[in-house]
Image (cartoon, rainbow, N blue to C red):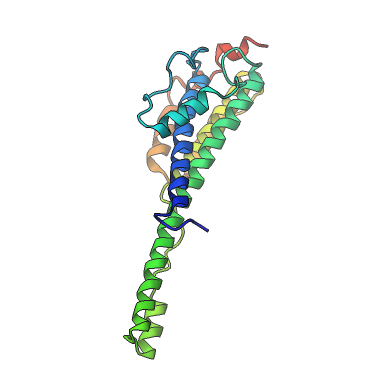
Amino acid sequence: MMPAPGSPDASHQIRGQYVASTRDRLLGKLLEQARSGMLNPDWRSQGQLHPPPASDDDRAAVIEIQQMPRQPWEPEQSPWRVALDAWFIAQFGINERARVHSTQVRVSVLEGQARAALSQVTVALLAGAYTDGMILEELTSLPYPELHDPNSAVHRARRDELIASYLAGLHDGGISNDWAGWLRARSHTWGDPMAANKWKIMLNGPTVTHMWRLPSYWRGRD
């Protein structure tokens, strides 16, 4: 059960969700840099977490990331397969948490609509404003919108991009697969024309064979 709006528990939950989403956003940028070979090994002390924290909650998210143990996906920490696997698990987790949070926001909207409808019916019943026929008409006409997350196509596309990047890393490491063909086929299932068109152009371009190569600092530990 969700805490009542405006309650201390609700406020605490909102702050916790903000810190978690900020942490994931900042961590996601680090992971993108790690996968592209651009992550500074000394990122903790070099101020690579941008933008600078603007509130106590922002600072809490930054501190949480800075104090985490060295990760296998960081430069020169692990053999390429261990680093790639760890990177994928971390990035996939961020994408899934974002997808779940987006759905939870939609559920909260539906809960608000339900509370408003119930309140309206309750007040009318107690005031004697309904005849028997009106009650049936009013109750059966209450809105029952489907739980459709408008961001689901974006999350689906992002998930498949992460999987393709992982497959491309395996391919570069010597485990042959047709990651580009897989992503090309998957792009038609997203329901996101802009993302599908972006990958149609990129996968037909001259740089496709150089995409998502393994960073040299992951190979250095082999």
